[in-house]
Length: 114
Image 1 (tube, one colour):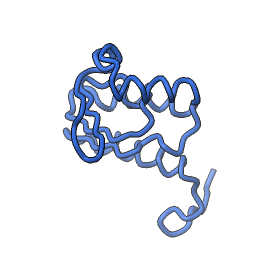
Image 2 (tube, rainbow, N blue to C red; image 1 turned 90 degrees about the vertical axis):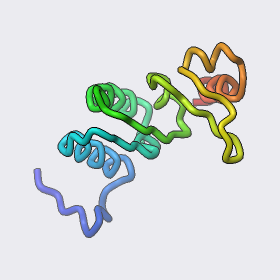
Image 3 (cartoon, one colour; image 1 turned 90 degrees about the horizontal axis):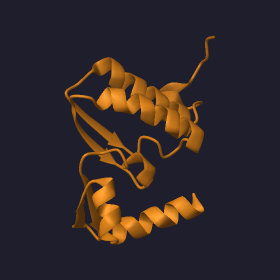
């Protein structure tokens, strides 16, 4: 199935562009991976499927993930929580939830309201 996508992917949706970017990251197989809002334009079902693929992609790599959607971060080894440009919390998902701080508050809000 061929598709003309236009210059710089002009005819692609945001989610399609994100999926192509992740596919390119798989192909590049770099040792350092930076994912900046890699799932922000995806619906929750597609995000869940992509997160499973990302687990494979991130194995044995240094990965920096920037996200507002906390479900993207929940499997990370170490999470840094920023507030007004400063690190206010640090730890794994479980540790940060147990602390009951900003991360836990944001997590509860996102779980409740999607």
